[in-house]
Image 1 (tube, rainbow, N blue to C red):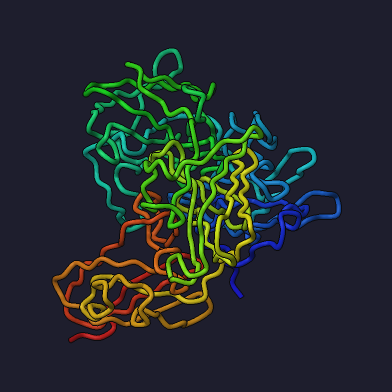
Image 2 (image 1 turned 180 degrees about the horizontal axis):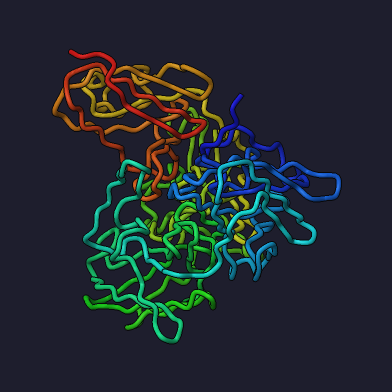
Length: 508
C-alpha cells in the first residue's frame, strides 16, 4: 500500500519513543512528492548500513527538480525530529546540526546525466556524499525577494507548459524580485510599501529570500532576533522550527524601503526602520475556541509557563465539535496574526511543524466531557492534550463540496460536507473520484473534505507553493474551476500524492 506522502500521515507512531527510534531521513526535491520536506514521514527514510551510515538511491534526471533544470535541493535528518536537522557545512561533504544549523542552508546540486544517484549520510561524523558525480552549487550569484511585498502582482498559481508556477508574488523567476549586488558584497532592493498594503491590507508584510532562482535556497527570519536570517527555509522547504518564520514586519507610512542583505553573514536590515514581530505569545486557533480562525480574538491566547511551554484550557464535549460527535481541529498561531503562519502537526501525533502549507491541522475526537489542557512546547516541537483524546490522522473517506447545482439541496448551498451527497467513491487506495454535472460558462468554487468531518480536514491546492497538489492547513479558501461547456465532469483527488484533476467525461 502506498505510504501517505501528502501531509496527513497514515503512520502515526504509538509513542514519542517510537518516533525517536534510530533512523535517518533525507528530505528535498529528490522526492517528487508533497511530503518531500517532512522530517516525520517514514517514506523519506534512508537504509542503514553495517558501518553506521545510511544511504538511499534516486533516479535523477537533467530535467528533474523543482525548476525542471536538473537542480535538486536536499537536507538530512538524524533521529527523526527537528533537533536532528543537518544542513550543508562550510564545504561539500560536511554537515552542521544543532544551533549552528540556523546559519546554514540546504544542499543544492545539479545532475549532469540521467541515472541512479546514491546519497550516503554519516550522522556520527556529520558527513555526506553523492554518487554518481554531481555539480554542487554553493556560491550565491543572484538573490530574490518573494512574497506579499509585491502589492500589485498576481496571486494565482499558473502552468507555463513545463511546470506549475507559484503565484507571481511568490515566483522567484519574476525579474522585479531581483536584488542588485553592491560593491561591498551586500545585496539590496528598493520596495514601495504602504500602511494599507500586504496580504491583509494592514501594512503587515511577509516574504522570504531565495538565491540563484532556487526557491529552496531560502532565507527566513528568526523571531525575536531582528536582522538575523535562518538558512534552508524556502516556501516549501521550511525546517519547521516555530521561531524560524518568514520575514514579517509592519510599516506605518507609505514610502520606499531599502532591504539590504549579507547572505554569507545571515543578516539583513531594512531602512527606514520597520516594526518586527517579537514573539510575545502563542495562541490556539480552530473550533476549540470562539471565532475559530480569528487569531486576534483574545480568547485564543495561551499562557506561558516558567519552563517555556504554553498552555490553554479548552472546554470540549463528546457531543460537540464539527460533527456533533466530539470532532475538533486546531493549530497554534503566533502573536495573534496569520502573517507568521501557524504551527500544526507535521505527520506524527504529538509533534509540531511550522511549515505551511504542508503541516496539517491537529485533528482529534474528545473521549470525555469537560476541561482539556493543551500544552505546546515550541522549543522541542511537541504538543500534548490531557485528558487523552483520540487522534484522527488517517483519511478514510473524501467529500467534494462546492457551489455546484447538484449540491444545492444539502442545506448549505453545496458546502455541507456532512451530507452524504458529497461522498466520493474510492477508485484505488487513497484515490477518490466523483462525477458531477456542470453548466458551461460558469466558474465554480470547490474544496475537498476528509472523513465526513466538515472542515476539520479541508484539502485544497495552495497558490503560493508552485505545486498542483492538495494540502491541508488552517481554513483555506476554495479552489476554482472555469467550466468550458455543459457536461459531466470527473473530479479526482489522490490523498497519497496530493494530485487532483477535473476532466470532462461526457458532453451534454
